[in-house]
Length: 149
Image (cartoon, rainbow, N blue to C red; front, side, top):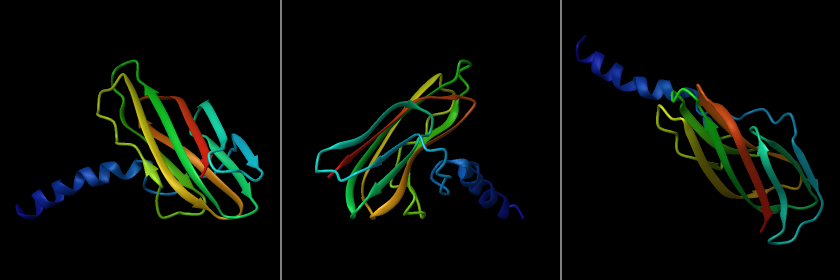
């Protein structure tokens, strides 16, 4: 049994990560902002500031290349924040986020994470979410910028 215990203990960090933002698709509600129109290369269609894990609804008449970026912050007055991460999820791809920040160090007072990705959104109604998760902290000032390419 002693040989089994070290292997079991080695798997514990993976189980502890089960709550990170990259494990499973989030819900796409409530919608914070919508964009419905034709866009041209370089046009910023969403520039949302100071939201909490915002959801954006997009409607395109054709497939659209997009650049998506997010910056997200969290604060913990007691210096005991941990496990903060921000991920960019799209409703048309449920296998994983298209971009994710590094996970914060434990014991933070303030944390900032950044993620970005380039995606091809299918025509019709689709959703993008910048999802932040953390432990013992408050989400602050998540931004989400979407530009057409």
